[in-house]
Image 1 (cartoon, one colour):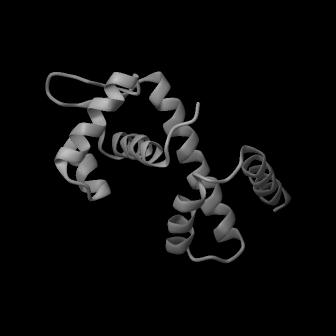
Image 2 (image 1 turned 135 degrees about the horizontal axis):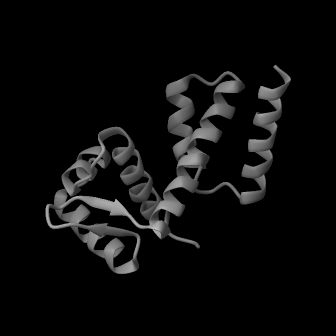
Amino acid sequence: MQIKESAENYLETILMLKNTRGYVRSVDIANALQFSKPSISVAMKHFREEGYITTDEDGSIALTEKGMEIAHSIYERHQVIASALMHIGVNKETAYADSCKIEHDISTETFEKLKAWLEKQAADK
C-alpha cells in the first residue's frame, strides 16, 4: 500500500484532528495544514473516490478502514521516531519536526529496528 507523502500527511492529520476534536471538517484540515480550502476540497474528493475517507451530509470527514490503516501507520512512525530522537537528546520541538520528515522515507526494516531498540531501552530502565 504505497501512497504519496502528501496523502500520508492528510490522513495522519485527519486522525489527529479526530482524536483531539472528536470530529473533522475540511476547514479543520485546511487550518491544521495551512492549505487553502479549495486545495483541501480537491484532496478530499480524491480520497473519497479512492476509498480512504467518507463524508456525511454535514461535512464531517471520517477515515475508512483503508484510510485508518495508513493514518495509524504514519502516526506510529511519527511518535516512535520523535521518541527515539528525544531519547538521544534532541529537544521535543525539533524531534517532532524532524520526525515528520523522516517518517515518510524510512524503510520498514529500519523503522522496526528503531522501534525494537526503543522498546528495549524502555524495558532496561
